[in-house]
Image 1: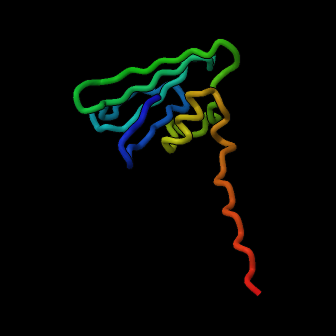
Image 2: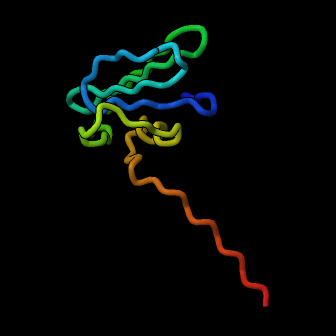
Image 3: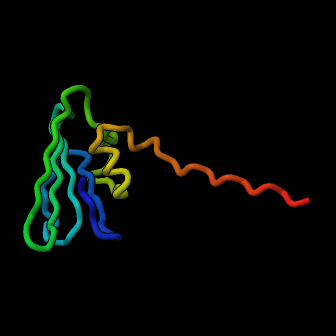
Length: 102
């Protein structure tokens, strides 16, 4: 499992892009193959660039429609994406209501 420092930004490439970002920024950069079943994650951990790659045996990674060049995800959304789950449908569970004191 990958874990990142608090405040690390996750950049999801929504279309093929020319990566002119600073790979040494400590941010996470996520790319998908054309068929959608392969992804790569590039991350600078302070001592070197880490490359994580994953290919799904069945199905495709859930990717946003090509509207913008990139999208920002939370670390939790990235974890769901890596597992092949639909990260777009994640919402915070409502907190339980306290019983009214009468």
